[in-house]
Image (cartoon, rainbow, N blue to C red; front, side):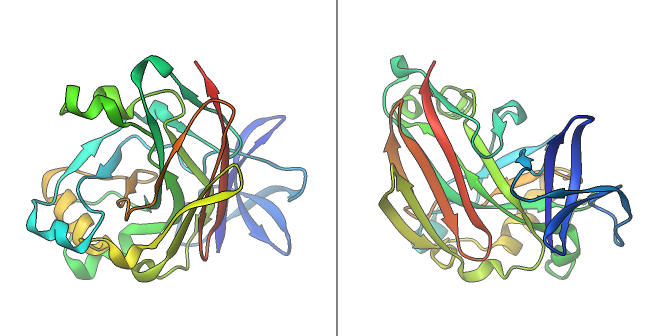
Amino acid sequence: MRLARIATDSGPRPVCLRDGRWHEVADPFADILTFTGPAHDVDGARLLAPSEPRVLLGMAHNGAPGDRDLPLQAFMKSARTVIGPEHPIVVDQRLGKVVVEGELAVVIRRTCRNLRPEDVPSAILGYAIGNDVTAVEQIALDDKLTQAKHGDGFTPLGPWIETDLDPGDVPIAVRVNGVTVAEASTEQLAWNVSEQLVHLTRYLTLGPGDVVLTGCPFTSGPVEPGDRAEITLDGIGTLSNPVRAL
């Protein structure tokens, strides 16, 4: 099943793809969806970020199997960095080199704490494409990552949520201006989705719509104002965003 949020004349609306059209739903996190409103043509719909997280986490040093020698840790990102498809990534060139990072994003379905491995599937609504944009030269200056991770538009998310996806081996491709700059798979992550959520919910509560960016398995590339970044995940689609200067 494919879930999204679209802009309408009445404001943002959660929708589900059915019979080739976006149909409005009352609550995308419900076990059984209730269809509430009109249907919208796919071609004319303006997609927004498919989730509005209160908690947005990125997994640190989780880009290669060898990272299992390091502690499993996460960093916070401001929910205000979240944007949808075609919204701009805003680059402050005074901060140095900026890279896009293609990642699998987990969208949480329900309030959860102290998850066990067997609890994880029911805690996940589905998966989207995440782009963990990073001003990499700021990392050495701020180990809390505030300066590196919190620019405007630094977390493109979308284009929708796929509820039926095996996260274990999802190919990821990163393109800048149509040129492929990186390819890898979630299979290369040190810690899988279940391990990540069990670890995170030991220390904090996650709730409906919260998002975990699961890690960058060498799927990054530099961008500058005027570029277009595209992240493709097999089984989900492509998330495309322009890059502009502050």
